[in-house]
Image 1 (cartoon, rainbow, N blue to C red):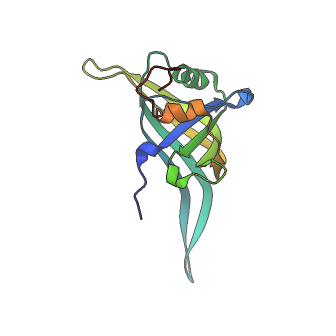
Image 2: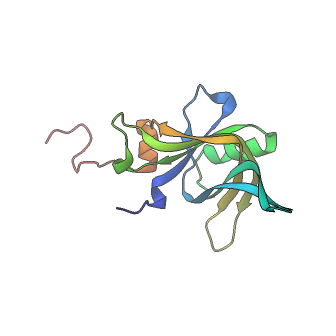
Length: 167
């Protein structure tokens, strides 16, 4: 049995209104947490305690270093400002988990970012942090990654000879 590596779980985003486009990865992701919670109320009765189960609440906290040329960061910031609904995928980019169809295990959710913070310390990299609030329940399945999405997650092996040159 092997440990799951956090670096192999990436987040992809897309505006729900732009489903005709490919989802994109926020570059330089440093940390994210996909959390699930449910409020439980304890009711004391004469027969003993019973539990009233509340609705599922899910959210994803996101942290990344700002990139100069990343279009996803400004798109996410604008979605907070304009209150736009997003799609989010947490994809486990691990070759050992890849399906026979070439798809990766993923969690899919729709929802909204409820915050956006641009931190710019004098001695550190400029960072962003945000919180994605899931609407309804996240769905589990397998996601297809384009060659561009896979390369954004990890660069591919490149030979030592010049592109187009024959060995």
